[in-house]
Length: 168
Figure 1 (cartoon, one colour):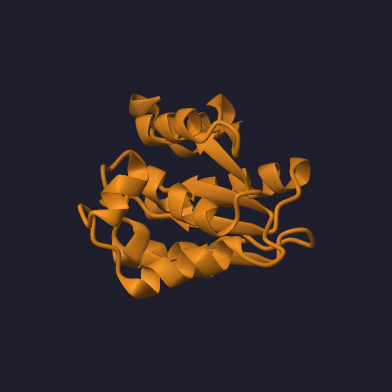
Figure 2 (cartoon, rainbow, N blue to C red):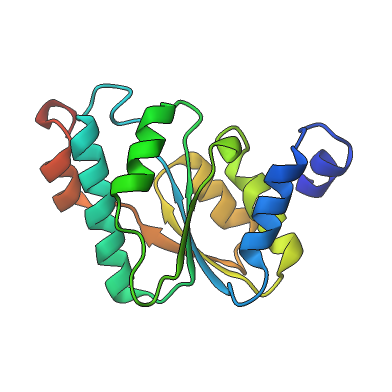
């Protein structure tokens, strides 16, 4: 099980990473949007500016439909650090209903299933909204079906708008 992997140290988790995830799920953070990052820019399927605009538009769309306390942007392991800095600076993740955003480079190498398990360890009543945009997000949704609320990722309109046409 996932807990066995953590408890038997098959995956090493830095204490600051562990504390970061536990703190996100505590207190009034009952609804979290976890957004698994992409490598559209790194794989040359779009420009850096367009990828950031894609996230911005998606987050604004989701924020109109769902009230959540925190957005956790989980970077893809292949994401460039510079891109993560720019996403943090340029995306408008905070709205009147969303009071926090978090991008933490150190969770990029953790499987999404482990990230969710650690969040739920601190708050079993947590509601996690998760765009289903990869096999990792799909399996996480299946494993934690009682706590994950799946969302459509991007959609055709945003993909056509921001991804180079030869990849659409």
